[in-house]
Image (cartoon, rainbow, N blue to C red; front, top):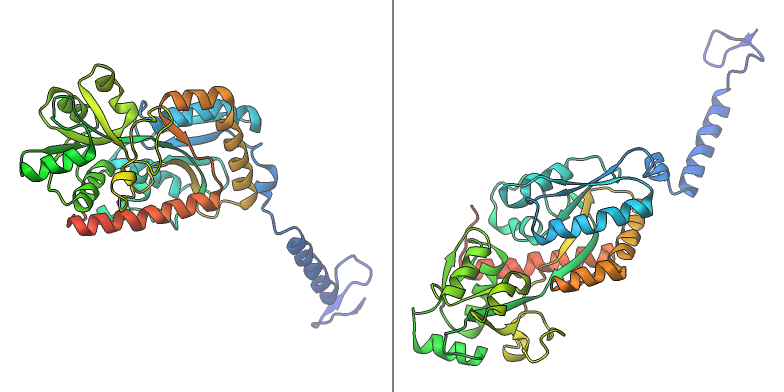
Length: 344
C-alpha cells in the first residue's frame, strides 16, 4: 500500500486512476468532443429509433395537410423510417404548434405550419403559448399558394384601376370577404384599401368556401383568395380575376397583371406553407431533413400535383425560411397596426 494523495491509503497497482490522470482523460475527452462538434448521440443515430411524426395543426383537407401527406411517403422512403401525419387542429393552429414546441428536439416530431400560427399570431393573440421564432427551428418553406383579387362576374369592372374608380365613386357599396378577422386575406384587403386609397368594407366568415360562394352569388363583391379556392367559381363564369397578388405574373394566366404592376407600393407578405422542428434541433438533422424534403418536393409527380393545385414551389434553405418568417412578422405587423386591429 502507498500513501493516498488526499490522505489514507490507496492500493498500488489496483487500476484506480491518479487524479492527474483523471484530469488528462477528461481533457482529452473534451478535445475529442470539440473535434467532433459534440454531435449528440441522438443526431448520430437518427432516425433509427422510431417513426417520425409530422403534426398538422388543421383538420385533414387544407393545402398544408395535402403537402404533409404528399411528402410523408417520400421522406419515409429516403430516411428508411415511417413518417406519420398527425392532425391536431384547433385555436387557429396553435394547439398542434404548441405540441411541437414542447416536443424533444430529436427529429422525431415536426410541424407543418402556415403564417396563421407563425406570423400573424404574434400580433393577434395576447396569450400565445409559444414564441413562433424562439421555440422552433425552421427547416424548409415548401410552397406558396398563388393568390388573386377575385370579383363577382357581374360587377361592372374589368381591371384593378376600374375597381378603384368604382369604389371611390360608390362609397360604402363594395364589400370583401375573408376567413375571419386577422386572417391573411383580411389583412391583404386592408393593405389594398390603404394603398389604393379606398374603403371597401370587410365581411368576416369562418373558412374560405362561404365567402367565395357569396362572391359568386353576388352577396359580396370581391375577395383576396388563393386561385385553388376560387377555381370552381372561375370555371363556372360566376367570378373573374382582376390581378395576381404575387410580385410577378402567373404562368398559367399570363394575361392577368400582378398587383404590383398596377400599385407598385403593394407587396403582399409571403403566405408560405412550411416545416419546423422544435427549438435546438441539431443542425445535422435539420440539414438532412431539408435535403430530403427538397428532393421529395422536386420529384416530377410531386411537382405536377402541386402545380395543378396552383401552388408555387419554394423549397429553400432553413436560413431563407427564417428570413421569410421574420419578414412576414414585420410586414403583417405594419398592416395590423395601420388597420387598428387589437390582439384578442
